[in-house]
Image (cartoon, rainbow, N blue to C red; front, side, top):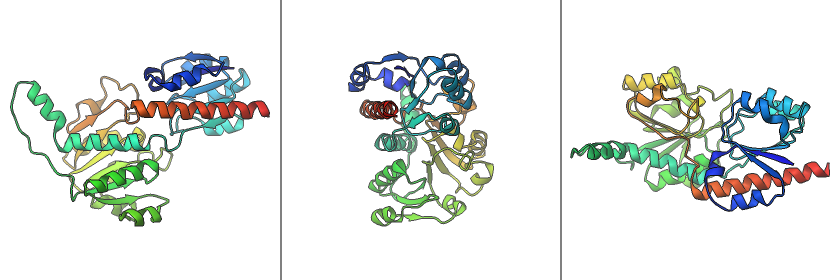
Length: 314
């Protein structure tokens, strides 16, 4: 078997996941993703399996890999499958796996790294001091503030636990609310999306990207958001209409936008978000820690091994 590995986190981080994949006994070809559809189209027929990140695995890629090549398995290093055409995979009998829950602790920590950096003026003060000035800005407490958690899956739940440790009030919205978890941790679910947005000081996004959630935060929904709210997005960039968020920042309708995900990655140098005011951006590193890369890499490889064995048995 010949396996294409595209995840840069996997490749760049030392750890036992490298030993595990190198000891499989298969040919491993490494390329630095995320790969575009056109790039994959040109090479896909060479591979039996993909161990991928956020590459553009479209209908055309899967069709060509299956019909003209030997593609059998796609093991996602991570959780989100929105970059993979799942209907095409089903049509051409391609096995798809992912790593649910693997990022939950790491991403939840990153959410609070962003929030604390913003409300305590960490980035601003660092820049001020390094410019030779002594200027002490006034920040804000998290205690007694209301955190709105959009989506209470694995990551959303971990964010809630940490928010409560900061003495924050939590309000959540989810199409499938977990009332047992809410009762255990003492927070409430709002019944409507509009009511959910009205009284929160922070909005953190933890839903999957699909047609229901695409551009969910837009010009219309921002009208319901409490003025001076801060939005945090560590999920998928397309859940937010970036133009609407930048306009809201310019009009002082919201106080800040803290973002780890972008429509185009790597981020283009001329992307409007770079020069938008009251923004902190990080280059999709919410899950990129030594501990989690190893954990995630092993999970993805184990999924791959299991899928190869299933394929051989059939």
